[in-house]
Structure formats: structure tokens, C-alpha cells
Image (cartoon, rainbow, N blue to C red; front, side):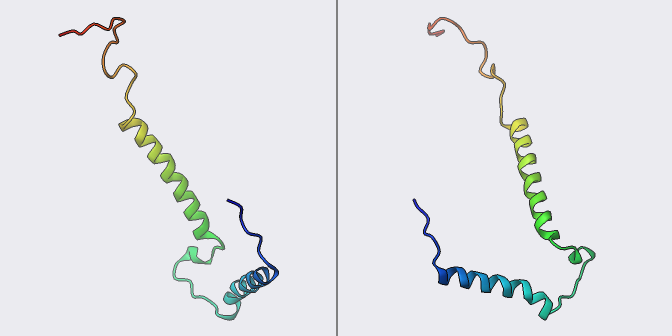
Length: 84
């Protein structure tokens, strides 16, 4: 699937929306409720670290609880005889 190239109008609208988004905190100052609210990009970094930790922990839990050793079903015999 090929992505469509944005037209000049779409690019201009995107630029205006971006500038307005960046200017909003200057026009309407925000009130920090927690000390970390004043750190720029804190929630983006917090989300990225949380996502990476979730992946690492889930991979570890999967290895510990789900992966079985190669001899889980017992010894493999070379013969195809039915033991019954």
C-alpha cells in the first residue's frame, strides 16, 4: 500500500495546528499540581520507560512460566514402536 503525499493545503493546516499547539501554554499558563509537572517531556519519558519495563518484565515472566525444557515430554526413543 502506497501512502498518499500530503498536498500543500494539508501541509499548511498541519503547520498551523502545530504552531497553535506550541503557543497554547504561552497564552493559557498551566498550574502544576505535582513537582514533576514542570519538567518538560516528563510524561513522554515516563511512558517510554514504562513501556520498555513492561516488555522486559513480560518477556522474563514468559520465559520463567511458559518455556519448557527440551526434554519436557521425557526421553525420545529412536524406535517408532508402540509401547502398548
